[in-house]
Length: 246
Ligand code: ADP
Image (cartoon, rainbow, N blue to C red; front, side):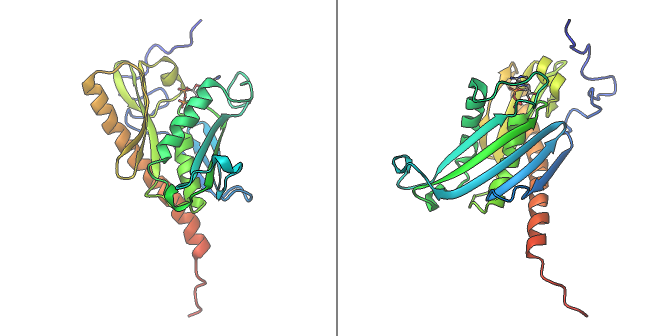
């Protein structure tokens, strides 16, 4: 028997989790949570829990993989075996390989790789608990972890998805909306609004697609503010000068 809800949006225009159609789930960002990584971030977004560690820039071995004029970026998206209801078989899957590839590409336009020829920058994104939107959640965490590692970037990358349920566009799909919705459009963009990742499942009209992109843009703008706040909170603390006695 399907557990598909009869309706996703009630008569007051609210979703099953009480959100407005253009409202993102609650997000919490914690920076510098791993002492051995060069940069790290723990991010909760609704019921998603993601941990990202960044290492580098460091010399790439074996040397034959080095790029003479830039650093190599490696991005590994991985779901912990216990991150979903049914245990996930450990190791890469088609899905995780695809997500790793598109997520790496989402950062390539912003990371100033030309500054580190022969080096590698490693991003490890571990999904500890999954509840729809893990690729976008991991990108949001990776962006902050890269900044925490001091990797020179042209700006932060922020990501969120728009989907369609009951024929209506909704921002930041929850699990039921993701499972049974009519479309899912995850997008990542730079802080200047340049799109660096765009994928789509399902169907949208051209008009819906244009509107969905606008909604993603607004979602990413809100997320960018939270990413910046989290970074400011960490680095303001680190660099705080002792207040002189009056
Ligand atoms: P995203 O997490 O980026 O939305 P998908 O749309 O592929 O990516 O997955 C949606 C959700 O489905 C995931 O967040 C997770 O909760 C669940 N899911 C994905 N893969 C599996 C799996 N192999 N087993 C169980 N649940 C999964």
